[in-house]
Image (cartoon, rainbow over all chains, first blue to last red; front, side, top):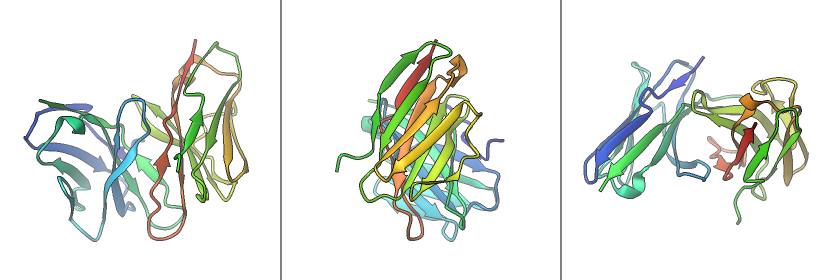
Length: 113
Length: 115
């Protein structure tokens, strides 16, 4: 049972344009959401997060949007750069317990120069 | 800080052999996680340790998998006997448990191939 779903395995975008990566979740107990970025032969690294009390969080070129009613979040990268080419994992966590993080299957982004 | 260290980076073995993956977490971190990455299931949590004690091992697929954390600076994940379906990239991550959210820092992973 995949509680965090990334339905697009891959995405190609021209340099300078916007990249939009989508993520859906099924567990209504999730209240903290994260995006991790992974380059080949490296481990994932934390990129940006959002709490369920917000619907938007921005950090430079990266913005995460959360739609709680639709159980959907998205990561926007503007403008996209070739160095953004990587696999992006969406992840979610619930308060309480030890804050187990549940990851999606990832979306491979290719930014074309 | 060297970050999370994993060894070996690559492991190729034959079905039935024992495999041991090693992890050194970031100094000062008290939480350690083992994950497995596959195309179909993404990053799956196998086991979580807090202060060297296993807290959640519900993700360990079967009895062939075992994990230990004898001290705060070392953990192992063992597969015995290994099977071809165990082929995947295995990540170790560590964090400091405290505050609202604990960012996990991942190692570079061990790519395991079981022939």
